[in-house]
Image (cartoon, rainbow, N blue to C red; front, side, top):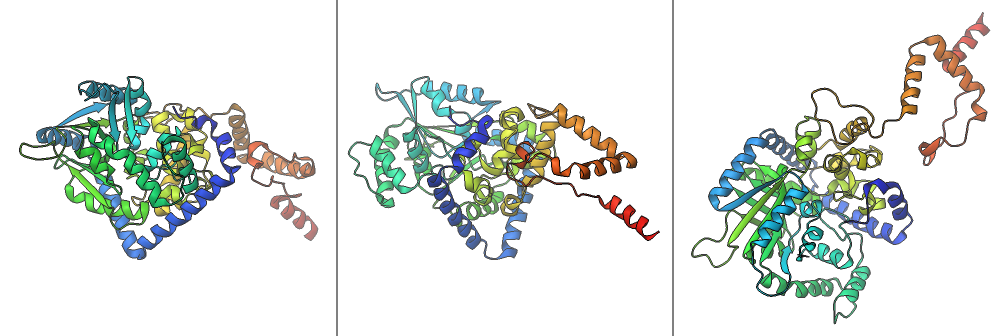
Length: 481
């Protein structure tokens, strides 16, 4: 369980702002990623065309999601992939445990799962849940490996250790790896991590991965990566378990290249990543490598709730590039841990309420200036600011008829606020009452408090004019008579 929780967002954000090293780490990393994306989309017309295409594909696939999931299951099963359905994190972990317990470890050591990059495994708290049953989950993504050594959690969805600089990584290795000679040479640090992991790939009976795109047409699982650990996890161990959210399905294999192009350019500024893995079946007779069994776990965990509303369904268009985080003025200053959720930043603020409920995440939906930077760079054009406004509405008011209510609906409702809004509505619809109120505000303007709660923490308190425009005009008319 993470030590960071969304209920403590304000304190966690304050702690992050008070940490100059953390802010320096993020500032440098975010500036670098912003420049890389800008260079990758040097042609504005090409960028617009890529984003239009990616948005259209995601929206089409989401409209057909139920039937595509059935098609995916049928084609994966025909290919020899075993498909499992999980309604929530508990179901997913139970499936992992069942599969793992059917696999025999080659020694008297704890059963080992070696993992490639998977945010869904973070979402279900897989490592900790498996540890309760004496099953070790070892992260093989370099960033994930570093923070696992520290007992930390990811702070970014594609660069989990981005909150650390090379000196901090060296300190982590020095504290946990025998025989390590402290260094800040990045290549040496990477080689150290790879040397530690190489033997684990060979001996682990189970490999775990996420899925970037699951192709319904062919029953193919696509993985995007830069390190090669994903390919090792999905080919060397005898059993491969892939876990993904139900929204990752695409209709055709031809849908993948446009989404792949949009993803890599938006995430790291690359035209193409170092590795692109396509898995359609376990090892076939006569083949020399590949797993003997492949399992696919399809996780709901609140996604259906988002799907059934035409507006919030747009949240599920996300292809997990992280561009919204890299350009968000809030995230770039406080980092990912302050949010207390697996998915931080702008996308986390609109996705986490569906996964965790609004009661736990109500502070996150207000942690935005609504500047729109996230929407401007999103490769699938998710309207994040308008979705944040929608979630703010849901946190205050009851859901409209015909929509599935979010868990924690109306959690931020305030009787005082409701009374004040009703009073303002009454005044605004009765001219004499409104004008009397503005006149009174002008009379007491110098006696108003210097602070109005949290609203004035970062804002200058409002001060009514001595005379409203209405009263100024009346005064002018009297002077002319």
